[in-house]
Image (cartoon, rainbow, N blue to C red; front, side):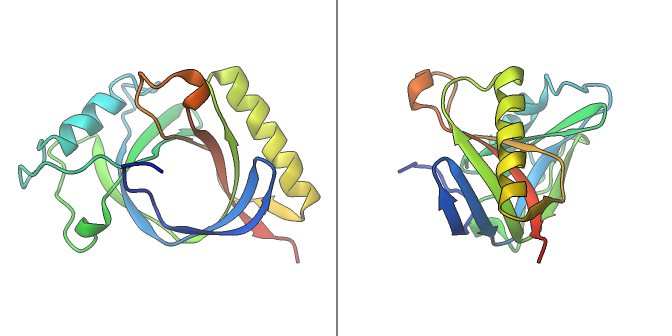
Length: 170
């Protein structure tokens, strides 16, 4: 079990490395910068935010997963805001950071270990999309890559996931 807080969800269906999850809504602080399309400064900016570089100068607990999303030409990266801040989230001082609500809903997921490379992410995305089609679900969002571990965690102990918002075809 992780020592870090994670978003709440219920497992609707599980089959091998695949899951259908129903997430409750939660908040994220998201990094997006058109001058940094590959989010090279994403993690550092988010880390500074939780290390007290926010309007309230408050240190915020680390959470997991770190979420990365590709949106056309750019990428975004986000931290999950700890639940205790739900009613008063410290405002970012960095103009590339915004607070957003991650709406509740159904998500398809596939879990994998090791380092998350572009090739592995594409393979997992394709596997998830095929499984979702077989189960009668339709993808409603871009792909989210969720990473749960610090950089020094050995590859075989790493937890990564591909997530997509879905809805049932029936």
